[in-house]
Image (cartoon, rainbow, N blue to C red; front, side, top):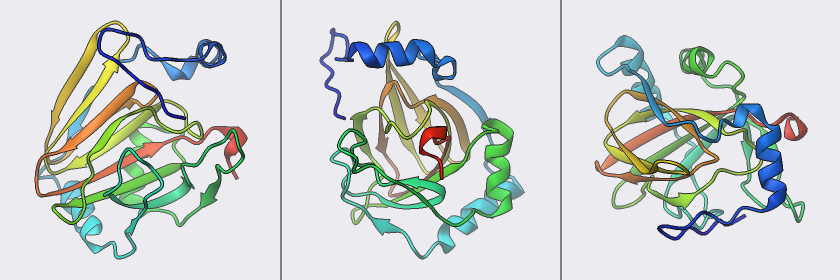
Length: 203
């Protein structure tokens, strides 16, 4: 579902979505993004980056109008990012990530069951993504590990637009149900996002 935002106005959200948001305690709709840790220069960072460079099955998906040029691969549960309303949305089981990657999710998002790894190697691919809210298959809280330079921004209902400059090894906590975007700055960038698929869509 596409959400439009105009500066100075509230996003258009249906009454049903508002009720769902109120009912879902874990959504934390007013949560502000937070830097959890920076692992740059650590053994864990080097191990993860080496693994990212070794991934050979990145695919270029054109399913989202928000990010047409990113390369991506799923681990655990993955979404086709299609509409749930017209029953095109589907969740698929993919292979498990390496244990040293899973440990990051276990530490900061213990109930994670989905990882999306994105790669951008400009000018051929790019991890930049326009303003959007994440797919309905997922709960809002997520954890992202960043390699490369990027700017992550979100539109908070009380505090307006908030932005954070990301660099190698940053691990941040985000609420993907707030409208957000990311701009890739460095030529090469990877990001690993841990999410939790809602139980009604889990397989």
